[in-house]
Length: 477
Image 1 (cartoon, rainbow, N blue to C red):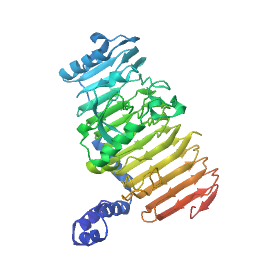
Image 2 (tube, rainbow, N blue to C red):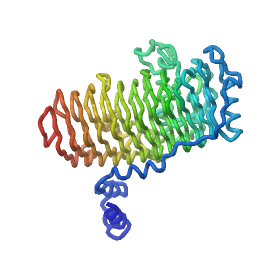
Image 3 (cartoon, rainbow, N blue to C red):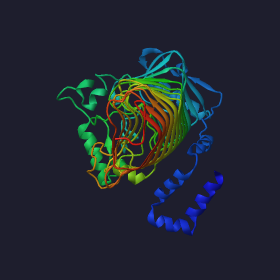
């Protein structure tokens, strides 16, 4: 296999490669080379060697020694700030939250700090939006801005972590944060303020290329903050904690390298309550987590529209394994804020099962996003039931064809997937001028499927030992 890889590299680098690239873009040539590899999964160990959780000095900084009280009443924001600063100044260690309920505003982590939420501890975040100002540099639905601080936030730091067996409670509900979405289902009433105006203003600024420093959306904007957001950080670990009642996306690393999300339990059913959304990140491991969410369980992203293209930083080298998905829109999703692209994603040994889970594997793109999604590999996926299709590739998402950027999905492989119940096996719809390329299913079984699959504009659909309702099929749709 290594000899074949070397041959491919030399071919692409030499005269023959130059002729080849006259007909294909560089990305397409590389995708074809990747597809030619006998076993793409052989690349996973190489990726994992680069993903190493940070290690912290054996120093503890108990928040109660800085004035915090675990009675659920006293505002401990200043105590957390002092403990984090002291830990960082000392060269690093653990900021320990002991058993009890600690009410606080935003927690801003600094380099070499591990926020250790002990078993029996709950960090509960105050409901007053003003506590999350002044505005910080953040991303909201894939667009950069100065907005409300995420509840746990780090900007341009190294070696940071949130660990322990305790609970992070966003304290969001139909009376706080969630109504800003503008849905009656989550407490919105006609005439109440909501995010629509600010969302449209931000999108317009992005398209006009307004500098991020001028995109200020603080009080009165109603753009909900994310829960945990390391931004431009290196060496990040989120491990063991339970996360509930999030205002919006729950774990949202942005522009980070070397990220581990492990053994996290997420249960939050508010609007846009995605579980884990690595965005424009490199070398990411998500393993042994449980997701029970109000939106996508895992959603890989890379920036929205002009902002995604301006930064042009894909999410790449992502390994997902041993995770469990319950309620949600998609089990493993790519998109829709995907204009920067995604490549080299591997998902293995995941279980997805709920009558309230829409889709197991979900890909969202359109002609406004225009992202390049390539080298996407799934194996050993067990699906009990989903409400809609097991696998969805949707170029008609939101704006659909109404844009000038070509969406691309290519080199997508699913192996050893078993599904117990669904409306459809596949719902895969490319465009006539932008088909889905090289979709391969091998050793997959779909039982109790209600309707025929929808397969439109797919170039290179290959089925090997695929069964639907007990019968081997050589075509779908």
